[in-house]
Image (cartoon, rainbow, N blue to C red):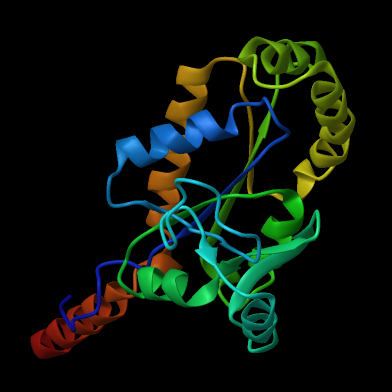
Length: 217
């Protein structure tokens, strides 16, 4: 990697939605659209399952190590779920941002708020995905064929709590047509990459313009 300042700083792209609204599909499409975009690999204190690779599926940490990283501000966000800790390590994300590479987060509203309020919060882009209706949300959950009726019922009960936090996101998209929603998401990402804050090279460019202008006078 060159020591020169990159043309832009990377973004922390946060996607959130209730289960079944299309967040995972949109995340996959984003990664296919721009191969330079990487998915944030979470850390966890749970044991690895068969086939899971450390550093690829999760960073598997001891509870002592995880808590120490939290205490040392080494996690952008973290939570305790079903007896285990989960979190997003800060160091690899900071490195990516400095090198001008975007990092994608597929997290809930609580994790999103922690990241927005972190030291890297100024570089976040948060997008919430809404379903066109609750009936359609339920139809999609049933159509996936992945969950029992009991699990679907629990997901539906949780969905409104997640939806109620839509107002804390930068952008909100109603996913009534997947192709159109993805096109809108591409536009949002492209535009946010051009924010002044994301383009550190502009400072040198403006200085060069100023010098050129002064040389003319």
